[in-house]
Image (cartoon, rainbow, N blue to C red; front, side, top):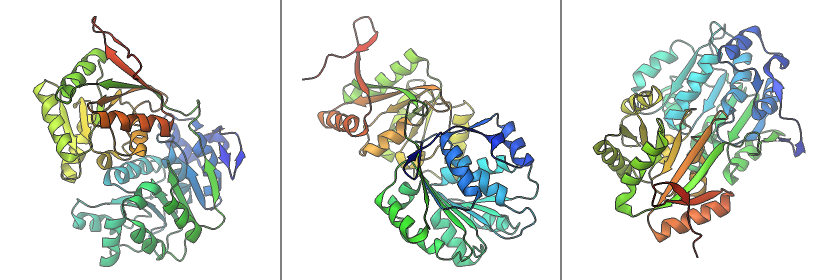
Length: 393
């Protein structure tokens, strides 16, 4: 791990960080004793109210890195919003809220609410009337509440932009800057992301003061253990190939990524026809149905989740056995985020990319080159075993 360009140790125990008994009890209830590198790097600076810009691989514990200090700083007796987390998608916002509530389990009086589109605004207004100290929100819905004057941010002290690069890339730059401009008492701003884009640096330059720059590289200690494979297959046989791989590997919890909403729906139907439980999540599905589908998947009642990239951004599901690129992604970054859904929490994971055209093959070759991914070409031999494919000319 690097802090301001200097290599430092990335190891620390929670009981060495001077945390309150309430937080230590909540962390212990989760079964954690040792902080991840991003947590070891960021928590002390956040506790000291420093601005932080942090880059770390997906699945390395960024939420606790900012959540632990935010909860520690929160006064249970306060009736003002003092902590704000902005997230690019509803799913990620809900996840962050749930993790923060876990941290608040023994800190009586600290209230966390989540504001996002797709849910009736009236129910959110009722939650805000209970005077929460921490708000987790998507930028668009938070702006709606600000216009209605149902939320006040003038007492906010800590702001966090989670998945900052994605949020700004999705067109929320103006909303984010307007939100930041409404908080005169802000003490520190944290920006957490898997990649640091030009837009992230622009926000940092304007709104942060001498930020602490923390970088956690995907080294052998925190790099997900993911075996990556490429299979060349006729387009009409993709669903059969996927069904065969599912049975061969006995994978019980799988995410299959598609480039379009239509293909996600189609794949769900194709797998269902083959006796494999699968449902789709994408932007055209109502929020309540998406949450219901995700709950079924987490509870093990759904074997395959067919997802578009935006819908699956930030999903925190630790025990995904395998990821399928049913469609080769259009962006290099999407590939990294897709396969990062498996091999989490130091488990072994596997990722299959199904290639059905020359253009898909060229895209995957480019992804492997640009991301440094080791993607092995494999095929089934006459015995039905998966073996290394002959090198392509």
